Amino acid sequence: MKEILISQLLRNMNEENNYEDDIWKTCLDKKGKRHKRKDISNALKKLQGLGFIKKIKISSTDSYYNKLQYSNPEDYLGFVNDVMFSNESKIRETLKRLESKKIFVDISKNINSYKLAKNTKKDYEKLLDSVSNITELSSAIQLVRESKISEKLENQLKICNDEIKETVDQTNQKIIIGRKSTEIILLERGFSGRIPSPGCLKL
Image 1 (cartoon, one colour):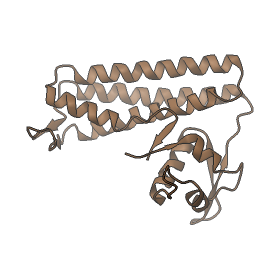
Image 2 (cartoon, helix red, strand yellow):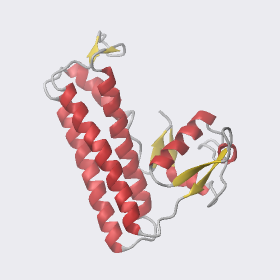
Image 3 (cartoon, helix red, strand yellow):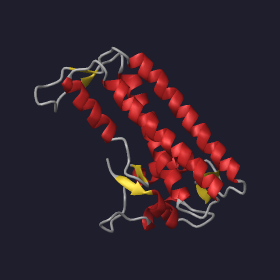
Image 4 (cartoon, helix red, strand yellow):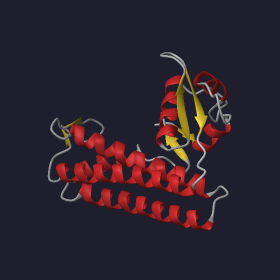
């Protein structure tokens, strides 16, 4: 999966009245080419979910985005904790339902061909989404920590980042317990494909 830097997206936006089409035209990849429209659209949805921007609807077909400013640091910290709690709860729930159940079936010898088991597919995809969400939140937190914030907020956000790392590490350990080597390889591939590089979003 492709990635895009959160900071790059934000640099290509004004404080207010940012239209998706304008962002698509100005936010280029490393080769100087435009991203796919659907990728920019997906990235903007994620920026909303990370508390950086707000979508303003003008009509049923027209909208724009404004950057969000937190006058009270506690508001941002509260937002971060809400996102963490929501996704960590989903991770715990899906891990419990996936325990001792097959996730992959019909795995080929070279492990390049496989199917997701019907009875666990939904929970596995939900688990991947939740892990992706909190690791992207970690990218967002890191970006905020690099900006001009108080020492108190910086320390509190570091605690949040450490908790996210611990959650991801524990999830990786728990999901592979009792599984065959082929399933473990596929699980590792699945997780690595959904976890972004620091400071990035998966497209």
